[in-house]
Length: 475
Image (tube, rainbow, N blue to C red; front, side, top):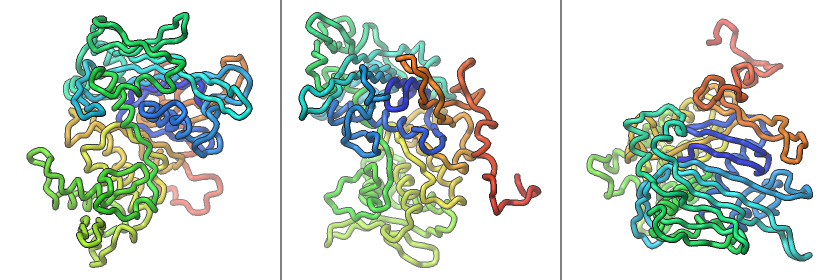
């Protein structure tokens, strides 16, 4: 779980600090740069696996395309001068993970603060391109005694916090940065704290974060942090991917674009490894069908995935109450998107952070309440301990739709606005600000926040509206 994000110098995130809970909705007009929050989360996730070059090419550039110039990632990246990105993520990591060889690893503490500084090295020849450089990397623990100050969202201390914030650390950092005469060095410290000699890695020659190089259980807490960051995903459901057929050889996990929907649901329904008392195959299908029935205009009698042993393909069929039997490829875009989220809800193996842009896309206004209920239900319930029935999932969405904003608890909202900010060079520039609702758990005295007066455009009919309910029917 990503509990706090601090960003300096990434795109138009000049200096942004964000506290996250299980569910967050970022609302703002088009062009404010609210999607850059997802970009930086996605960037951190890629940095936990890929090289610096590969990670930078997998993030949207200034043109909206991937694989562009690394300067696109820096605030004012094409202006002369030094370029610098500072990223900090406070996170709760899984206590037990597997290394790249399948061996178990147990973190000594699960509440961590990861800090990463990146610089830009300009091209050295006419035919070369610039590249990112690792300038600093730190991974430190957050004491259990300080957890209440860091976990500000409403939650049960007994059921939730005490089950996810576990372990202790007697020594210093797990990763630390040291400047030597020979250059900057990232020191890797063992879970034993001050015992044992740290392993130095030269930052200039790294080509990647040191965290991403930890692949075995020799450093279990660093590995747990890496696994947590790898679980952060950006969900961008595409109708063509949702309708694509699945062969028996297809992966049985839903991809970011929605591919392998049928194979995933078949795996969940037929999984014999679930704990005692878990729903059987028919119950899983019935539960998905019941949730899908929340959509107005979709009369669902039943739903199931049928394997074809001759063609070796899975086909998802929906049986309507009228008797019509439809394959997934015949369903509407909105129904498919909703169905994919229903399947994710049933999958206890899907944990970590899910970022989703504009969940209202393709959804009829009458079905927005059902969609918002479903999106919120994907997130962990912080009143209870995470388990198979309450997977440790976190959801962040963004939107510009009034209907979505009106359906959100104000405490779950962040208002995205571009505001004048003073840059490090003294110039006044326009940068993204994320404002919490006044009086909510995210707001702090003296810091900017928003009230109903700041979101009037989301709460009333637009000027010139031709069709409105009579005043005596409103409310």
